[in-house]
Image 1 (cartoon, rainbow, N blue to C red):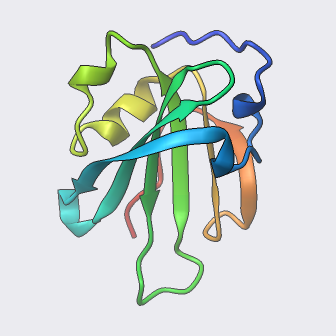
Image 2: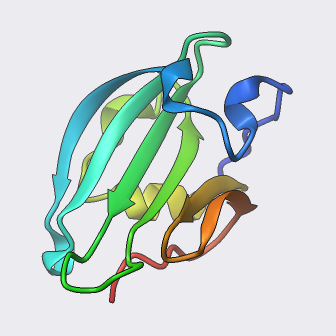
Length: 116
């Protein structure tokens, strides 16, 4: 399990705003027809790097869900859209939310619920 220490930065709050990050698209995860959007986000305050995964099934209302977790600088080059889910599942904790969960953000760990 990847241990990431919490520093008390605003980026760790489940409801943190996307305006607190610099974002760049990593790509689309086509695994099992998911079309998950994978983004790299860097906190403007503490400079830590997050992997953000978003998936939504247009034909199903309230199917939008996202997950984000901190990645170390040394692990970052190894993250691809296709292995982002596996990476997030390996973390000690991540943040998740979206209309599927009827949540603006909570802490979680373990398996991600990204498929229908």
